[in-house]
Length: 149
Image (cartoon, rainbow, N blue to C red):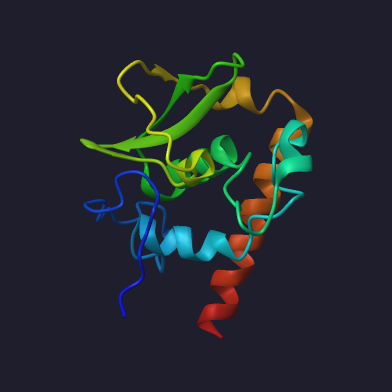
């Protein structure tokens, strides 16, 4: 039985890593699978932690996930402004847009047209967000190392 992926634009995102540290990651679907074992309440944005659950693993994970995907696959991180004034981040590599954290919105279809480029330095100006990113990256690298062993 083939696994069903529910993240936005999962059907044609056969993008390969450009960073040798992550060369064993096959594509964004593989990254999604790996992150599924890493995303947790700690990696969730603090303002959303009370709502995070194992059934909604991508909640509050968008910016750190998008910047990690950028480190792996290149491209740019973009964001769309949400009703609460925050930005939901996703990736565009070449002509391919994918959003590994889109499942957190359930059946709501986001409008990816009205987007703005996101700046890593601005996002990581808050220590907690940089620490969550480093946690996600380090857990991923450790998992990849264990996969090779």
